Amino acid sequence: MPTYMREDRKPVVQFEPALEISPFILFRRLKKGQELHLFDVRPTPGPLSLAGARRWPGQDWEPEDEKPVVLFDHNGNTAIPIVQKLQAAGFEQVRALFGGLELYEFSLDPQVVGSETYLVRSDDPGG
Image 1 (cartoon, helix red, strand yellow):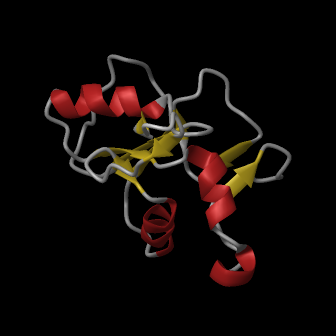
Image 2 (cartoon, rainbow, N blue to C red):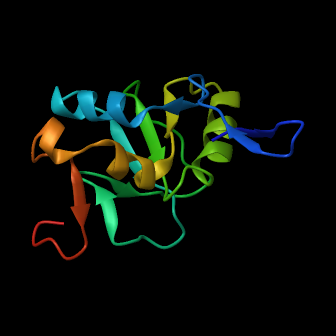
Image 3 (tube, helix red, strand yellow):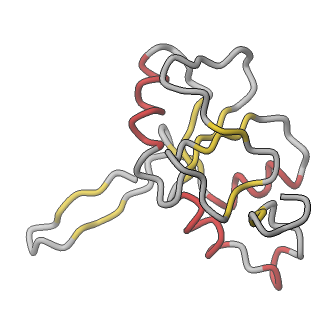
């Protein structure tokens, strides 16, 4: 989540489409069944994740195919530098989840989008 400071020293968070994917766009792609790779880049997984996500294999990993790749963490800050590195190496299909899981969960009200939000909790029997 690129952030800059205004003249009055208040931070402004800015969505960067070249680096990030919005929570709702990701949700729509998951709902449509689009094939993509989801990676949790947090050093220690938290109680919340995305269905089908895998642990980040490490800094030497490179995408093996052309499927879109979404990296996520709790708030989006850890994923951005990894995305920048991969994009600089020529992997344009890699994006970070804007706002991380925190914004994803906040953005997708089950009363609006339905019960399937693709979020899983560690205490879920299937998660």
